Structures are given as C-alpha cells and as structure tokens.
Image (tube, rainbow, N blue to C red; front, side, top):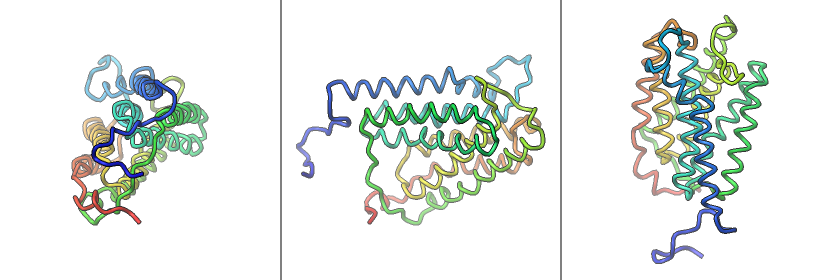
Length: 265
C-alpha cells in the first residue's frame, strides 16, 4: 500500500531487532578503516604538507590514493551509516571503487588491488544487505548544465586513467606502495570510478552527496598536478589540473529542478 503523510517512517531494514544499528555501526567501521588503516586521510596529508617534510613525497599518486579511500570509499560508507534510508546511494560508491580496482588489477597485471577489491566488495555487500539497501526511484534526466558537466566527466576521467597507465608503463619503479599495494593501479582505479560515477550522475542527477565526493576528489587532483608537476602521478600538462579544477566547481551545479519531479518510464 502507498504510504500517507500520517504513516510512521519506514524502517530502512525490517527484520530482526537491532539490524539498523548493526548496519550503521558496520558502515561507520568500514569508513574508519578506509580513512585510517588504509591511509586515506594520511595520504591526503601529503598534498597539504602535513607529512614528514624530510621525505620527498610522490604527491600525485598519494593524492589519488587519499581521494579514493577518503572521498569515495570512506564517504560512501559514512553516508550509509548516517542515512540508512538512503544506504544504496552510499554503498554504491565503494561498490564502484571495488569494480574499478578489479579492472585496474587486470590492466596493470597486479593481483594486490584485486585483494583490496574483494575485501571492499564483501564489506559493501554486507552493509547493503544488513541495511536492506534499495535504489531510490530513478528520475528522468533533463537537459541542463549539470547534465552536460556530468557527461563531460566520463572522457575527462577516462583520460586521467589512461595517462596514469601510460606513465606507469614509462617507469613503473617510481611511485609508492601502501599496505603492499602499488599506488599506480589505485590511481587508475580512481579515474575509472570518477568516470563511471559521472555517467551515473548523468542518469541520476539528484544524488548530491556524490557531487561533493567527486568535486573534492577532482579538487585534490587539480592541486596535486598544479602544485607538484614534477612528482609521480601528476598529469603531463598543467592544463589537466585546470580542467580538474573547473570540473570540480561545475559538478556542484544543482541539477534541473524538474529532474526531481519527472519519474523515469
């Protein structure tokens, strides 16, 4: 039966008692693991000079690692824990990251990212199942500046991933390793995640949380490329940094108001 205004809020995870609490705790735990033990926040610190200055950090690959594990994976789990009624929007982000890491593992012929992808997939499925995550009704996208910017992100970030792979082929010995995982395939996985996420935003323009996650990721990558052009992981030309910066600002444009009111057929 359709709900009316007087009905109580829907239980996001009907079933055994305490299911929602368990799901939220697990989601927040996964967010914490991505941000701290997986060095999401720590690697972001290298971008802003918060790490040991005696060491020459390869800021480009550090920034991409930090952005993926903080602004995509940790942020996705955090949204699921914060708003369990919209858990699907949250867990979709680490789900995209898991798939992208698996693809990167195959392209770079490196099994280490595949291990991370497998663990991430298990955590994503567990949180989604416990919170009974269901996709929100899809709206019909309307032609707008936000739609154009989202669509433009697909070739932009695929290009970022391709240039990352090309840089790795030129000199795979330059970079960094965290928890036994090379940063190069992780950087390519971030590009693929942002490309897939941009395509998803073009189809579901009302997912605001994703816009902020992607904008922060793009902003960090822009700064890393422009401020540290000689470090591993930086793009080969400053124009890429400016493109990332402009895209980071434009992706925050609100979608066409009518998109939230027109259901998809």
